[in-house]
Every structure is written in structure tokens, then in C-alpha cells.
Image 1: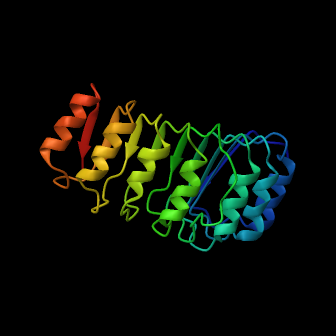
Image 2 (image 1 turned 180 degrees about the vertical axis):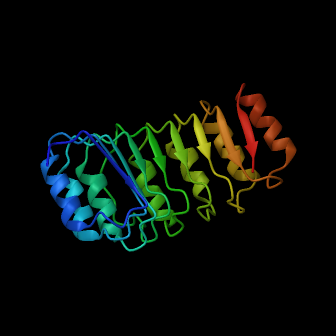
Image 3 (image 1 turned 90 degrees about the vertical axis):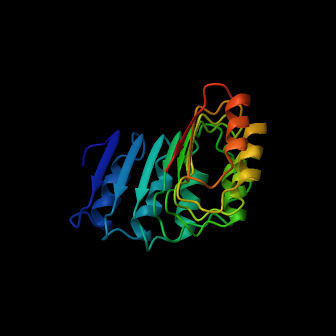
Length: 212
């Protein structure tokens, strides 16, 4: 197998642990972008090999319902050059023991539909990722996690937080106070008062608030 800089495969029953391990070992010194989505034959055994891809800048692991939380945490801890992370709908993702790791290069984080991440998990990942410009936490069953976004993610330009029905005026006020670089905010319809949204638009000129 020739070393690769990028590898993408989706909705495949063909790729298995043995094949992925071979690809990752051959490309450990060259791979910069990896995208695996809904590959049901992949397990912890192969995905943990990603930790050896030290030049990885972009990783997408979507629709993995049987992969352990420790695998995701090991990847984040070991791959120091990550700029883009997408862990959409990963059932066991919790990030509860992801501590004392910094992700200074991380610019984009997507956790859509990964609903088992607790407030502790969000604190761990967001406090490590203070240079985020893009955060997608659509449909994550959020309660008060937007307070953590406001606390740690002050460089955000894009915040997608739709289909989280516990968002309220207090969360928007916190974002307005701390996230002055917001250009796009995606939230649910009719969950915040018009007055608070008006004040946000006044304090952050040019912001576009999209309701879903």
C-alpha cells in the first residue's frame, strides 16, 4: 500500500480492521486528512491506530456507535496538529477523562447528535480548544453547555446549536457578552425572547441569527 495524504470512505461494508490498519501503518508519516463515515465493520482495534498518524490535520469519524470513548480521547491527545474534528453521532463519545490536553490548532469542531457528552465533557474539550472559529453542536441535547461555549470560545465565528430546546435568554446573554466575533448563530425558533436577540444584534453588528 502506497502512503496517502488523504483517505475517505463512507457507507462501506468492504473496509475492515485489517485493511484500515494496513492503510494507517503505511501512511502514518504522511496522512493529513482522514474521513470515515458509517463503516460498520471497523472497531476499536483499527481506529486506535489513528493515534500514530502524527501529521493528521483533519479527522471525520461519523456514525460510529460501538467505538469506545477512550479511542476518541486518545486520538485527540495524540494528534497534535488537528485543525478540523468531526465526531458526528458517535454514541459512546463522552470526553469525561479528556484532561490536561491542549488543542491550540483546532479551528473547527463538530459534535452533532453526539448526545452523551456531559457538561464535564464539554468543559474538557472546550477549555482545550480556545481558538475555535466553528462549532457545530446541533441536536446534542444541551442544557447549560452554552455557558461553557461563552466562557472558552471567544473567537467563534460560527455557532450551530439548533434543535437544543433548553437554550434560553441567559445563554444568549452570555454569548453576547463574550463572543463578539460571532457572524452566524443557529438556534431553535421561539426559544429566546425577541428583546434578547435584538440586544445581541445591537452588540454584535452584522451577526446573522438563523432559526431552525
